[in-house]
Image (cartoon, rainbow, N blue to C red; front, side, top):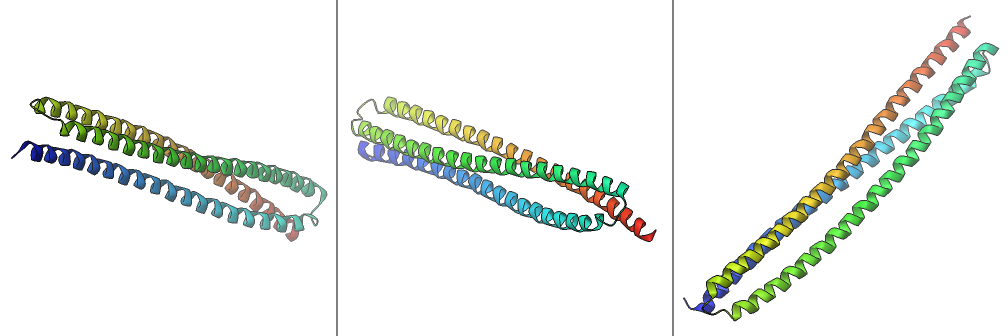
Length: 217
């Protein structure tokens, strides 16, 4: 086998390995971004469910307020106090909803920013790889008796490129983990809010029971 054929096979092997590794990296990044999209859709569904529960709660509060006018002065005072607590809770929940919405919007902006940054880095890596491959091809064209030494140098440069790609992947994994933790924190706050709504329902039940007792009297 002549020198040119050997050089061509080496070049094709190097380029093939680089393309394969880069393709696997891109596929992994796409999968992670799809996971973020599914998480956001799940969050939106939970928000819709909470809004429906709020509508139901407001309807029940309206029914209770319609019965308050028929009770005695003492019970009216207690119901007024309960209504004040409900109003305060409603205002607090509205503030929390606004805060959750702001955090979701901020998360979306960060995802967009990360996606844009990732695209820029991928383009930069493509350009860098293309440049290095061109330089390697030029050097291969000029190979002489020192072929073995130059091949070792080229392999060292490829290892450095792989190390940079691995470092980039580790950094992206770390950022994705941070985003997942923030989503988990949001879910915990939503669960705490759901518990608060359950307590309100219990208080409303007590009011209805008292109203029934008064009617029976």
